[in-house]
Structures are given as C-alpha cells and as structure tokens.
Image (tube, rainbow, N blue to C red; front, side):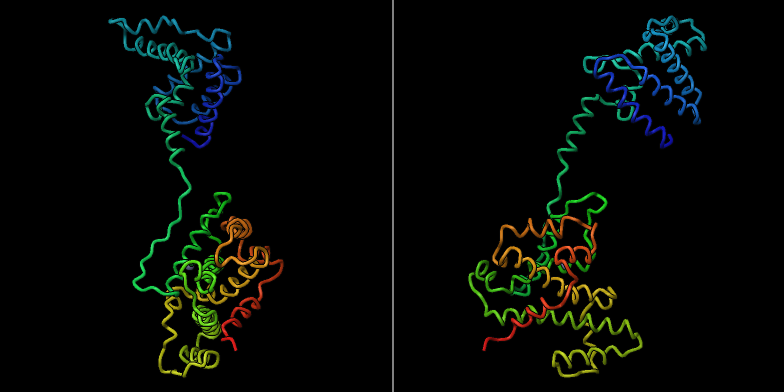
Length: 364
Ligand SMILES: [Zn+2]
C-alpha cells in the first residue's frame, strides 16, 4: 500500500468512525471519501478478488447515492450462496453480495457501522475494538518519562570521589530538566554538558556543602586547592592539545614539559611522556578543551547563579527551576554560545574562574 493510501485509510477511518459513533448513516462526505479511497486502491495492482470486493464497495456507495443505503442487504444473490447446486460463478457473485449485505450493517458498540469503518478498526489485529482500546490505554498509561539514575562504585572515598559522583548527578539533573520538542530531546553540545555537570560538583569542595552533607569541613583554601588543582591540570592538557593541533610536528614531551614547568612549577622531565596519562588525548582528539574551557563556563554559571539566587552550595530551593528554565530545558535546541550569552547577557570571560583560583591562597 502506498503512503498516500495509508494516510487516506487512516483519515477515512476517522471520518467514518465519527459518523458511525454518532449513530448517523454515512454522510455524502464519507461516501466521497470512500470513493476517493477506492480510486486510489484501483490505481494500484490488485488481485482479482480484491477488485471484486472494490466493485462491491462501489455498488454500495452508488446505492447510498441513490438514497437507498440498505440496497443489497436482502440480496437475492446472497441467499443463493446457500444453494447446494449453485455454479461457481453464481457462488462468487453471491459472495460479493453477501459482502455488501453484511458489510454495511455491522453492529458496533450499540450502533451500526459499515464495512470500511469496521475493517479499519479490526482487520489489522483481529481482536475486539474494546480490547484494542484497552491495549492502547495500557500503553499510554505505561509511558512515563524515564527517571535518570547514577550507578557507580567507589572503592575509596574522599572529596575527589564525591566530586565525581555529584558531577554525574549533575548530568542526571540536566537530562531530567530537558523539556522541549522531541526533535531536541537530547544533550546540547559536549562543552556545555560537561561544564554544567560541574556546577553542582564544585560545591563538594565548599565548606558549606561539607558542613551540610559530611558534618565536618576542610579548611576552605585547602579544599579548593584540591578542586582547582585538577581543574588547572585539565586547563594545562587543553592548552597542550591546542598547541599540538596548531603544530602537529612539535615534540609532545617538550610542549608538555614547557607548560607544566612554566605554569605549575613541576620539575621538567622531557624524557617522560606523562602527558599521555590523560586518555582523552588519544581516544577523543580535541576533547580536552571541553574540560579546560568548560571550567571557565562552570565558574561563569556558578557566579551568575549566586548573583541571582544567593548561595546554593548547601542547597537552594530555587536552583533547579531557575537554572532548568534558563539553561537545561532546551535540550539540543540551543548551543553553548546561545545558552551562555542568554544567561550572562555577554560573552563568556575567564574572570569568574580566576576569582575562584584566588580563593585557593591560604589566608595570611
Ligand atoms: Zn561528565
């Protein structure tokens, strides 16, 4: 069956059902729709029996046009079908007329419908319509938005593990907040997705979060150094990859040694390729910038949220609704640039991250 006739079948069923369920005889509009449908069927390649059935349907519609919708019901030929001495041709004709007779007087939930409607309702699955309806309701009732869960095992504890766990929960929060057209029911780009997951996870290193969830707190500067030590390493790897992408002939050990000794004061070991500890450099070329640049985005999102809602490290009832409405609900409809400029009212800048790194200095 062609797509057109499939569509027409569905549409025809809706029109015919509406008339039948209202307890009314088929209207001229329904007859016209049926005729169009039959024209379409005729245009295709049909078996001989199907052509006979369609001819019977045409006679039925013609009878309706003549003001005698029950024409054929007491069909002489149909009665002949029971004649034991009927010829093959007579039996075939009788069968067609029985088809017309019974097909136009089908009982359906207290009313009478015609064959076309009934076929649309029943021929596909061969079960009672009420049963089909019950199945459809069951399916709809079973459909629920999935609940995002995080499953992980942590053989050792510590703030690093908690930070990672809350980061994954950030992804779960994100995907749970997407509320958009089906075409966009997906993550936005990787940069934004990873950066947002760190918005809650950076709180793990804040004294307020630790007080609430652990009952104890580490000194602020030390705790933040534990967090931003890893952030800064990611920034270093991002810079390393950018420089190697710009100059693929460069010696990676030399590039890495230059970055780590100059900015992180790590003793140079150009003979050791320890830059390769970061597996994404090999498995996902170009991925590291999601972490390095992502940290800048995370700091921007956190700062803007505090500005709008006040502190949220130990919880804030407005947090989900506020961030969800501005950043998360769009799914993949908006890219990072649109989301961030919508949140900030300007382009992203590194100042918010630099302010956080300032907090890592021990108090004097
Ligand atoms: Zn992640």
